[in-house]
Length: 166
Image 1 (cartoon, rainbow, N blue to C red):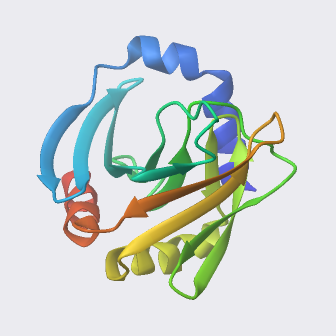
Image 2 (cartoon, helix red, strand yellow; image 1 turned 30 degrees about the vertical axis):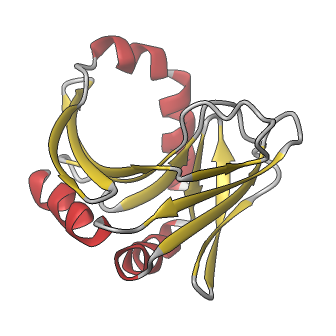
């Protein structure tokens, strides 16, 4: 519930944060993952991110699709995984993140989707161990979408993002 409140607050005030935010700075690239830092509303945010390697259906306008693991220097989020897309997600129809035989429910809020707080650590553990992440979600226009993300370099990138924001 705490995450949903933060996400809704972030969505409601997103334009203000973007206006107060400097562009992200690349810290380092680890294979298919990149570590960024950025100041958002006077607070430092560090994250590891990777772009989707495959998007379906091909006919849909997906916009930019990224999977993130974020850390706020203040500690309000540590190793928080999320999906960010270029369109609105259905909030009433949960998506799924799958790595190997493990899967987790993702809840859409605007253009982002988050796991339950209790699922963050197991999901991040598998992100660091696996080879591919598959995410399924539904847009606000009821389009079922599927994304694939490479996990090559994820372990080093996630660790670096966490240590950069300590």
